[in-house]
Image (tube, rainbow, N blue to C red; front, side):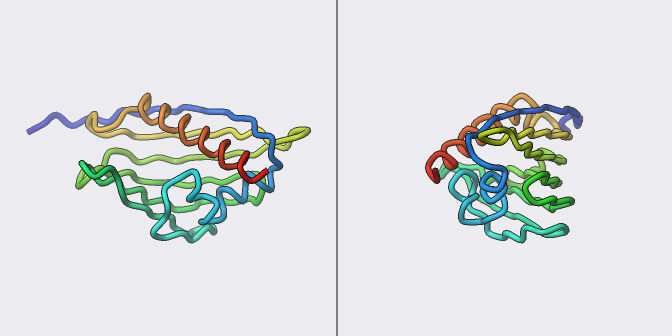
Length: 147
């Protein structure tokens, strides 16, 4: 039997976008807008208690499954969700994520905080933080395309 372990970690990633908090919030809250920078959801119910679910991956595998539940939503200010991430049949992590949107002159400061439990070495906080940076860069490119 393989050794089981959990690695707990918190990381924070910040971005400043030349877009209003309304536009940044819309990029999270609208499934068509979100699909431009995140995976296209199979289920998208953006409300407190609602669910976002997507499953997919490269042709050579594995299939990654993102299954989130929205815990708090304050329009144009804060989004909090919990989610599981699976790779094939293995649960690789469980996280709580807080997205804060702070109005700046000429834009928005986004603070993304993730607190996670990463299981059995299938995923690591460093890999997740790297992926989050790529994701938030893609959000920035999507926002630039809407300008």
